[in-house]
Image (tube, rainbow, N blue to C red; front, side, top):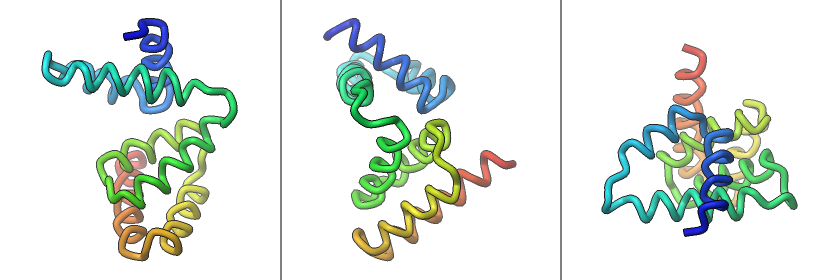
Length: 125
């Protein structure tokens, strides 16, 4: 494991997803799941998310579309919060999900809208 990339990835992961989420993920790590958490933190966050060619807001928009296409509601919920942390507005998130209805299918977008409403309600309540 590249310790520098892991450390950078952990910082970016915290900035995007929040300390509470990252602390929970790390605290639930055991010897079996440790390699996955290390891979995600070092590679996804420390290598790809750290690249300067795309701003975090754009990376978040891409993630929302891909997670809708892949039907990954748990990850979508996390990344909606991350998109808000990265400067996306609720209206921009809505527009991304509307766009997914065209290219990923209406059922996928309907599910993602459901997740979006749940996240917004949690944040407002």
